[in-house]
Image 1 (cartoon, rainbow, N blue to C red):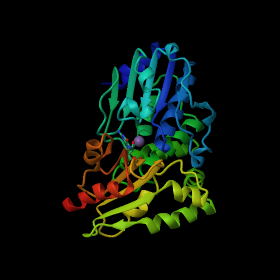
Image 2 (tube, protein in one colour):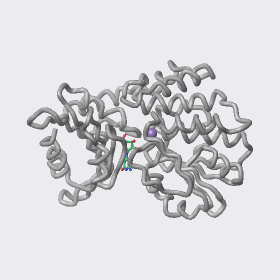
Image 3 (spheres, rainbow, N blue to C red):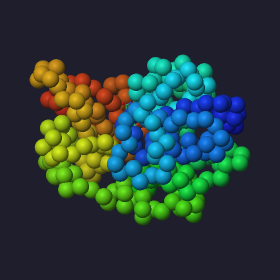
Image 4 (cartoon, protein in one colour):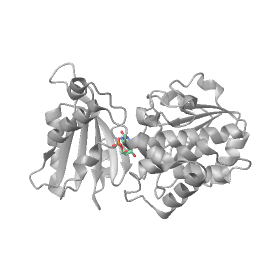
Length: 325
Ligand code: 5GP
Ligand code: MN
């Protein structure tokens, strides 16, 4: 599917819903805002939507006020653009209503993308969805990338490449980031907000997280656990877990790291809690395949899924994967 087909669809659209995945990371937010701003340049009526609150570390981004937590009247939209979502359900509860929007454009870089929607622009080789949005905006007539778009695109690329450290740190990622910096995105300002502003409570939580790390017998798998109890004890709100798991992955010899995040505590011990499991791997270990087998998805080296389980059972299930490492 070509970018031009997507541009043609956007051109003839009157009211466009833009949405990205729940519990958004920098890429989900950056791609959402930058495309929203570009479509506003085209004088399109738009609504940018994310079900979850925007994490505090991204609150500095210009034009965040554009992002709504409700979709409004779904029948008003003729087109939806779904960003950074490997399947439509990733946008949250609005997915079933959203599916009724006549034209659905799917823009994503996850290798596990289900190819939902009427028009797809999927590139697993792209560092981020923000990179793909950059290419799209660059192909839109009469839109020049302003400072606000530059900040959003830069932040998306920086977040998804782990500050230009992960395997998706390509020449294109650097090239576009360079352009965004020339257009006004200040790398120091972004890093300062995203990485260097941390509360004492968060440090105390990190302490507990480090303490929670367990290794498999062969030392190749690490599990880190984040419970509601820890959040309550430290008085912390977790709105973005994506950075935390890297501490468990840094351990020498670890090939696969898991973060078990208890999103909702179980009422009774037997029923189990609602967990989000984040997986990270080194080299050839494909965590997207593991996540997909549990109904989730992601990239070969970074993936996730949701599961209801007791903590003990979940740990056992995850430790099982150390045998193949
Ligand atoms: P994280 O561990 O930061 O939540 O997610 C890592 C990667 O896997 C991200 O690219 C994210 O979009 C994807 N991912 C995480 N959880 C899920 C899930 O439940 N379903 C799908 N399809 N992808 C997920
Ligand atoms: Mn992404």
